[in-house]
Image 1: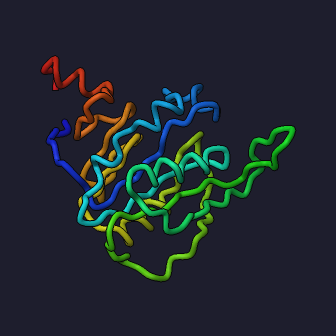
Image 2 (image 1 turned 180 degrees about the vertical axis):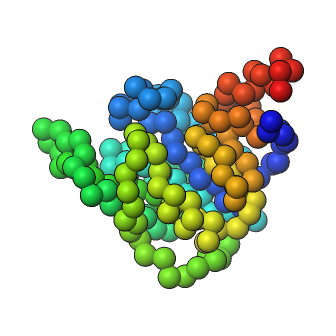
Length: 188
């Protein structure tokens, strides 16, 4: 049983938006882009200093920068996950075999490690599963408290999780997830 509490802000936040039109609707609930643009990221960021790690695809790279900047964050570096397999392509685009983890900051919170390159070579798992190496990298670089948004599982090094696929440890007003309703019903 996961204990729920309400912390106001975090020093490290990882997001993996359920982008529309990426094939995710076969695996999880996706959200329209206009709703994702209204996600209250700015309210979760520690104003004294925060690292935000934001997963995105080639298709949503421009929108991702806009969302982070609208939240008052500065994008410092893209970390590119190189997937050694051929992904989807279209009539007018190259075959996608990368995803990007944008590193953005609020304030001047220093890195815990200064030798991390801007690429990651890691195996590909099931649809939208992110590599364990990315979590290891983030926990080595970015301080606690840590929050993963749109999480799929609890991780020992992370203080809080929130999303449709986990028993969330926090609530976000206006963004209900299934575990919010079990809390209301007292079935926890």
